[in-house]
Each structure stands twice: as structure tokens, then as C-alpha cells.
Length: 228
Image (cartoon, rainbow, N blue to C red; front, side):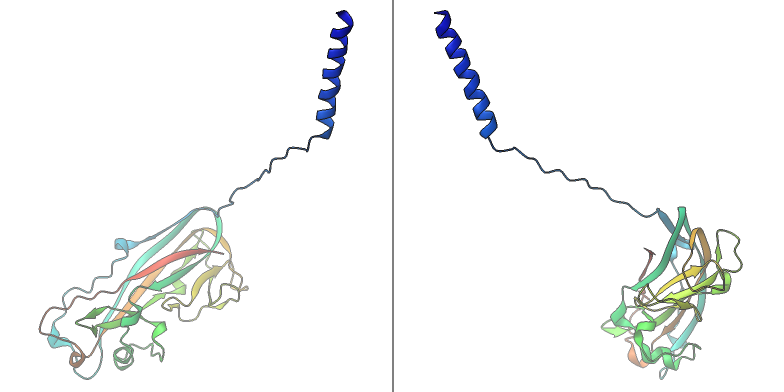
């Protein structure tokens, strides 16, 4: 009886070792993931970004050319929780409504031959209401609260930058950033940027509008921060 128990024990032990040595390795795949996010930045425009031209009498409108409504300005600030390299980009939400001929005939001082340099004021009864420009004056901008040497830059591809001249946003086709000094065209990293946005608006020729009822200017644009 004793020997039989020993044989059984030996046999079981041998089989266990054999099974262990012949089994395939068991594997498990691992992945290590995460996202490095840019520093958070906030963009604020005075008056909630609303440029209100008030009530405009139809008697004021010209029948054969666009009518300038003049300009308005609003301050803007960008604040970041760490030094961040960024650009501003403006998207026209009424891009198909730009009344280019009205703009060019109104004598606004910024003539253009392409509608993508302007923003639309919406439509009324399928008629284009007008157009407006959106600009940042380079002389009004300060970075990190003090740098008088900061220079505005402009790009169409976020790679090649040149000196900002007019400060004009194009309706979705350009980007505006700032360098730390006037000697470079490379965007800098800042924790705060402050400046002034200006809007100049033109209403279409009265002959192009249905003036039998009130018309509401309906310009809409999205100003967004692009992290570089």
C-alpha cells in the first residue's frame, strides 16, 4: 500500500511538470496612453463681442453705392495659465452674404477685390445686407502687460509668418499672432495679450434691398484661439 501511494504521487508530479513545460505562453497586451494638452487660455471681448450699430434710417442709404456705417471698437484680452504660443483666427459664419460691390463703392479706405477679406452681414429676403471688416490695430496690443516691442504677425498656413501690416482678419483664411520683439517674425509665448478689435460696416445699395420691412444686420463671426 505504501509503495502504491508513492508511485501514484510520483506519477502525478511527473504529469504536472510535463504539462507545464509543454503549454503555450499566455500573453496580454498593454498600452500606455495619455494626452499632453496645451496650456488653457481664455479669450474675452468687451460687451460680449457685440458691435451694435443701432437703428439706421433707410433714407440714409444710397441707391447706387454702399453706405458706410463707420466703425466701432471693442477691447479684447487673452489670458493663459502658462506662457503659450498661439494665434487668433476669425471664421465668418455668414460668408456667402458678403456684398463686395457695396464695400468697394462705399469708400471705406480698405478696397478689396476678393470677398474672403471681408465678413457678411447676412441676408434679408435673399438679398445681401452688406459687409464688414474685422481688424486688430497692432499699436493697441500689449503682451504680458508691458512689451512695447511686440510685433503683430500674419500667416495663411500657421508655418510661414510675416509682419502684420493692416491688421485685417480675412474671413477664415489668415491667422494673427505676435512676436516678443520687432526683430523677429517667429510667434512668441505669452501669458496675456490685450488689444483692440475694430469693425467697419457697410450696408448694400438701397436698390439691392427690400426696404418694405425692417432689416436686421446679422453679421456673425467666430474668433478662436489656435495653439501653435
